[in-house]
Length: 230
Ligand SMILES: Nc1ncnc2c1ncn2[C@@H]1O[C@H](COP(=O)(O)OP(=O)(O)OP(=O)(O)O)[C@@H](O)[C@H]1O
Ligand SMILES: Nc1ccn([C@@H]2O[C@H](COP(=O)(O)O)[C@@H](O)[C@H]2O)c(=O)n1
Image (cartoon, rainbow, N blue to C red; front, side, top):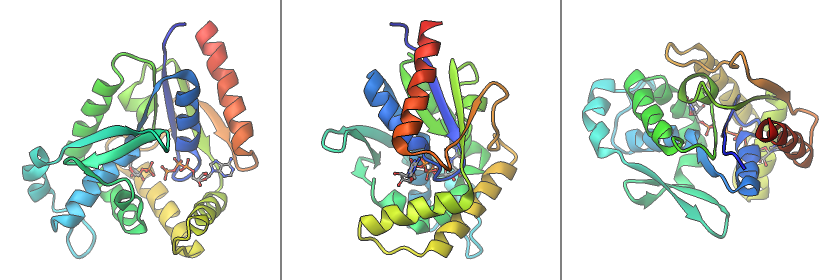
């Protein structure tokens, strides 16, 4: 069966990685969570004092330290998904905190960081057979991807899903903080100068506000079958 490149972009917390992970598993494709890469750089910057008090990034200092940041993924066989490593340290949980979420879009707007992340993502997907989720996969990383999906859902629905997830994990969660974070990230991601969050002209849009996880997976698999058989 021919291998293709599948780009899943969209707004924060709309279910991109849920869809992408499940699809990659069913197809035997590589799954790449590009948001995890920007989150890992953010964690490095937070740990190394590379944010100013107003939340802006100390870009000159960070640029000097870029050669000290190594992001890798290793398959977690139990969870059946890749775990993120920063300089060989497992940081999968540390990069998912609200503190990292509150700083990541500032990091992701810095041009030299995007350049480095995009180059690594293109290397990871060069042989096709990849499902990659993020904000600019269909527009910048793989503009030639055979299948592009752009996922949306209302901000309230997305915040509620994240809130439910944290509560289920027994983690502290405040709905209004989560909603504010989702809205702020959407704004910064859509308004930055380099590779702003946009639906690629040839992407297929999915509003999953009223869909279950099973329904959206089935919808996606149907699209993939059509593409692979084309
Ligand atoms: N259709 C759906 N109905 C209900 N919950 C969903 C649906 N799709 C995903 N979820 C849940 O919503 C939450 C966010 O999903 P997910 O992490 O896949 O989003 P994402 O777009 O990858 O987020 P991020 O932008 O933060 O990486 C998860 O708890 C997931 O289980
Ligand atoms: N291709 C991408 C992926 C992510 N970002 C930025 O990272 C943030 C976190 O991403 P999640 O998918 O884990 O929510 C996101 O808000 C963007 O700022 C990006 O710019 N490009």
